[in-house]
Image (cartoon, rainbow, N blue to C red; front, top):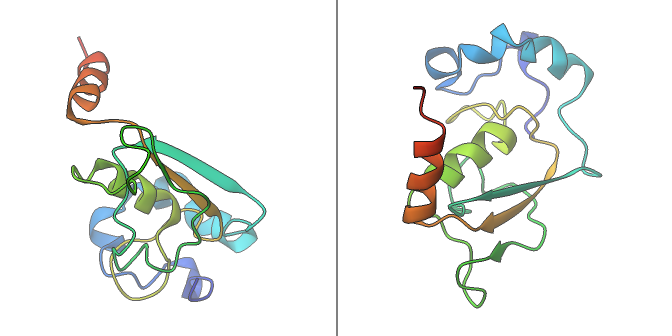
Length: 128
């Protein structure tokens, strides 16, 4: 991480425009206490991840795995898994993209949701 956000408002380009929810849940105050610990591993089972994304390139990955094709890397062909991973672990205060809520954690990215499974889950979570 490029350091604690100056004044606890990160300089990430899309923070003020697209992450108005983070101040509402108290993230600037939480960042004063911690930005995550490398002793914590967050497992994300989704559509995979784009590990070369500029905000995710510095992330420490722990045993990435592709449930759908075990011999392949868990690369994200849909974007949803990359979005979720970025929300959690994007490099914060680096002047680009978004601010991750816990950029100091290790990530375990797994691809276990293909297009059909993702559609099913989205359908199950629709409001009536």
